[in-house]
Length: 108
Length: 168
Image 1: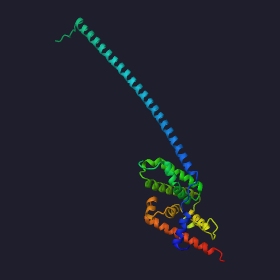
Image 2 (image 1 turned 180 degrees about the vertical axis):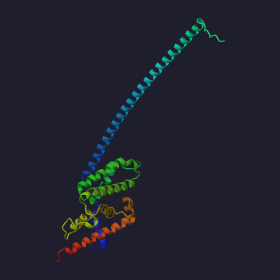
Image 3 (image 1 turned 135 degrees about the vertical axis):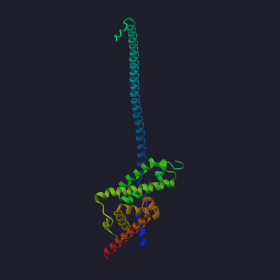
Image 4 (image 1 turned 45 degrees about the vertical axis):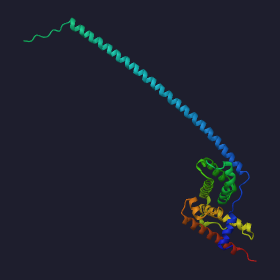
């Protein structure tokens, strides 16, 4: 027993593989199946959350696009109004030049 | 997954190996069952990355060994002895082989984490020092010296036990 080969033999005997408890297999397979179900539920929820996020971002983008479109329409209308006003001013100036001749000051 | 057997078949084939590594490393049946379950659940998640049954067996052995070390260390933060403070025995020495085997088991179960798992891999799983080094990610020289130290420690304990036994 005190010699190393004997000790190693005894160690092999003491530590030898034992068979697993009878219920371990069922416990492992149940846990794996349960984890698989939890995993598929988690995937489903992740997809729902992703879809909701996509819809929210899409709606916000659509809202921003509509706001920009309205702002551009208002800006166009404003530019048109400015052009019309400018033309009117030019017409009035032309009439004033025709009806009221400019009198230049006399110089010696 | 190639020609790998189904997960249930792998559990059938290797539950004894994984459970035995955990049992002889942790020294508690419940803890060994919990650890075996966690190892197989981890296998279930990583199975797609394993190519052959040899690969699966080595993966299971490595994972069981390393998780056993982690678990022992986690417990040892509370109450673990070092290699030089291993208690003489948890059992009463006797003449029959079962008692001697129990003495050896309890002495191994009181070794520090790496030495304990290393001893299990060497004398239960019959791995060579090079294979143990690869499994535990440590130098071969360290594996050899720890096996040597462990055998020396066990031999010393058994000699002291023999001397302490009443002669008659």
